[in-house]
Structures are given as structure tokens and as C-alpha cells.
Amino acid sequence: MIRIPLLKPVVLLAGLSLLMASCQSVNTVTTNNPRRTNVDYSKIDMNPSLKSSIDVQGVLARDVNGLLQAQVTIQNRGVSAKDIQTRFEWFTAQGMQVDASSTVWNTYTIQPGELRSITGTAGNAGAKDFRFAIKPLR
Image (cartoon, rainbow, N blue to C red; front, side):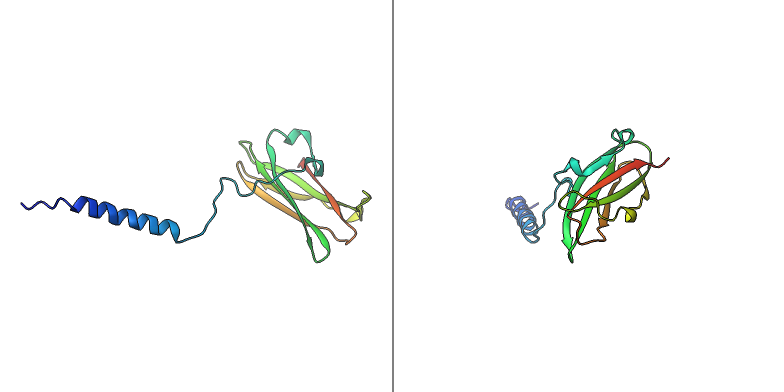
């Protein structure tokens, strides 16, 4: 039997080269929870009965063609599905509510562990701030 003492180092070097090449070929960023942002709790009006099971993961806002758009990401931390209702309320820069008649409650079922992003867009360019309300479906 012929022994080739360099075979192990060659195989190891080839494997290491492949591993290094695969790590450098793609520019990606991965986080444990990409949805998490700083939460401005002054914009959240949550029914106290939901505070132990529904967690607000993020609150974002942006301007879309002159209208304020908001997104709130919530997660069900409970062990059972939760039926909830949510709505966005829109306010001027001076704190006056904009078109209260257009705020409607939307119904969702959030499964255990589920992350759900809920988005709303103001119907009036005068809206510069918002509040997100969430309550259990009764």
C-alpha cells in the first residue's frame, strides 16, 4: 500500500478555500429580528387586556406622495390566537384630529408567535401625526 502523506493537508486546504470563497461571494446582512425598531409608545393606544400577549415590535412612518403613511408591527406572544381590532387616527401638527369620520376598525386574527405589520395611510395631506389603537374583538 502506498501512503500519500500530503493528501490530508491538500483536502483540508481545498475545503478551506471553498469555504472562504463562498463567504465572500454574497453581500448580505442578517439580523435575529429585522422588524424590530425603536417604538414610540406615545403613538400606541392598547387595551390593557392585550398587554400581556400582544407586543409592539416597531412603529414606522413616512411620506408617500404628500400623505403620511404609518406601519405598526405587532407580535402575538401568547399561546392562542388573538382576534383584535385596530385603527389609525390622524392628527395635524397642532394635535387636532383629521377627519375622524374616516377612521375605521379593522379586524385581524393573530396566531401565536405571528408577526403582523399593519399599515395605514392618512386620507388628508394635513395629517402630520398619528395614533394606533388596538383592542380585543369582543
